[in-house]
Image 1: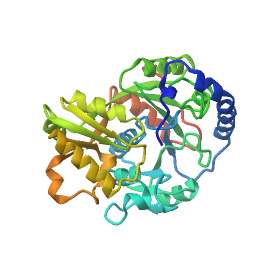
Image 2: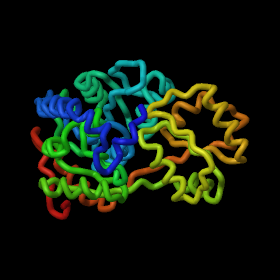
Image 3: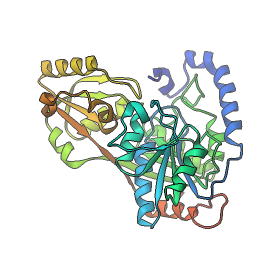
Length: 344
């Protein structure tokens, strides 16, 4: 899916207003669904979601949180829907046995960092993870899905994009009105700096919601290999401009871009076209870790030196504040009570 450009205007444009009635109806239906009670499965559930359709940084946030939970002595399992994969689940993702076509690109990436279960039926997936030894479930996405009772609900916001024009699908990127979604959220994670993200943070604080900030850091060795080099930026993610911005920040010179829709299924023809264009520019090809889960099986061994995969990791600006939120996962079942001190 490629989001229409008018979603990301600061103020709604004519196409957005024409679609507003449909967005209003969609948003109200989604909000009503969010408020439904979910099933208890005997384990705390931490949901890492977002307010909008498209990428905001949920997956690197979930990975960072699982590492923090592991340091606390927990055994986290990530639960994902498996978007783009043919398997309905529930099944634990095995990177050595599965591929992106079977389980989806993001689960393939996630499973290289933490044990991961995919399931269209979230309750069934959580029960499988519990049976495999999970002490806590980390849902990557699912803020609007009411199937499971969630102990802690975090909404991830991209600092540059924020919530776009502030309208609901299809008029804008929001899945439901922002104020209503904030009421169903325990805290907000803003990734990167930007006017749009700062506006969402202010709205969250005005509603009494804790806000934590974070940044994405490129992996050092890969980043150094791109510094001063000409590159073709290759990606199939929700916000390809974010990847392009990262490449520029590490010192690469972008001479061409091939930005496909989110979760794009690459073909041999795609790879051939990208290699041809890169050769014309005498450039390297830089891509994301998520895209590499689908490109690996298609990439010619003879062209391996031309490709650079640039992983990123999420770094919380004040990790102790996040620890305060995670403390709410322990104790008796019920809603989380995030520690407020210093979080606003």
